Image (cartoon, rainbow, N blue to C red; front, side, top):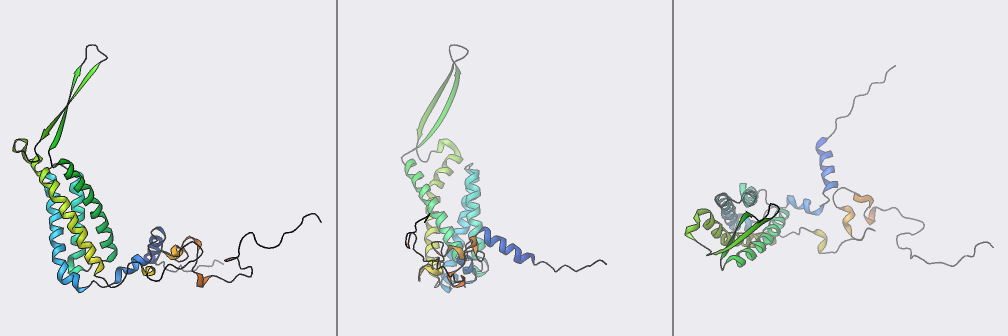
Length: 247
């Protein structure tokens, strides 16, 4: 006789959540996604977020004119993330998004500021001319470095748009970083729940064993560990009396 049993349905959404939790063990950070957005953000800061989001999209469009494709994608991405966070009365805004967005824009603001400081006295353009040498196996390269004013009408639209963006982009990045800071600190809860009471030791140095999936990395919280008759958790090493081998 053949034993035919019906297979139980698999909860794919739960399985996917467990896989994501194991690959990205952020635990308490993801738990903060359900924290309601403070009224200070929705009533006061939201309009500034909208303005900065639109400004990033404008910068992305100007980067096309300046012929900088990488910067176009970057500022379009930042603008899209901001608009995604603040739409529907800041429904998608979270402390984790604010922290990451603030860090990214802070780093970008530092690099943009350093760049504009090196170019404020004038921008250099280089051109290289390749010429054959006296013999067939000799080639001469001549590189010409020319210093131009920061804004120069003779160099066309793209050059002057680039100069304007050099000033505009660090200002916008600084504003986003500052607004992320104030929006983050308007929450009454903490992104890291253990930072007030300290991290509980679970035998792995800190509480990293409980992040993500339960028992991540094979470790379990202290309250879930079985008691050991050997007392190995806090047993001092190299302790006890000496023993003589061979009688």
